Image (cartoon, rainbow, N blue to C red; front, side, top):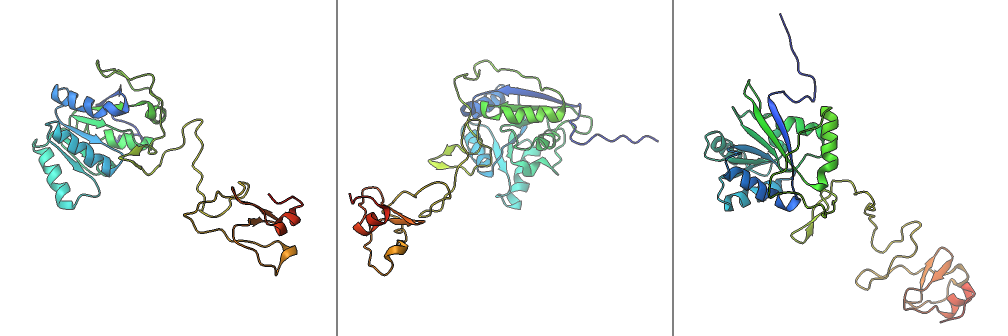
Length: 275
């Protein structure tokens, strides 16, 4: 008797893996070109977000390609219908999130396309495992832009080997495009929820509560639209009225806001002359 077990996080040898470098804004155009040319006839395409999957499916339909999304925001009936149409050949491209990376068995699936690389390298192995099953080989194609080079290195480190690369004529990457942090790009005028790490040289975003002074960051900027800051009186002038706009007490030293003057009482406490 012989028992053979594939090691964990190991891609099957039946899957031919390929990386195609392409600019982030030309990925959809590249996918449409490969489908129209017949190089990709039927594919399970992976995105990182549900919104991105629905939007890409709509764009492909406008390009004249039969496509359908499948993700967590779709009802069970919609997911079953999309998967049934895909298996029957009525849909050429099924755009999915990692929801479909596990537990979906599509017989003789010829192509898996990583439109966006996953944030976790192990998810790449699960994605491409949808093809190359039951003794039938398949292709796993990954579109990699300049933002995803670090994710590609993590995947190759997991696989312990580099993935072959092919540049498609007409889609050569622009070397002048600078990388952006994944998940921090502005889409339709609104920032996308960020899950990616800051790019090298980019400071991490600092979240500060409006109206408060963060330790070590000095005085919060005055904004007339926000609630006016609480006025603290100097200990030596307790019991004396203090008009609004004469400064904020930080510790034991009253400080004037921009454009304001210190009151005589506050000036006396600081030893300075009133402005």
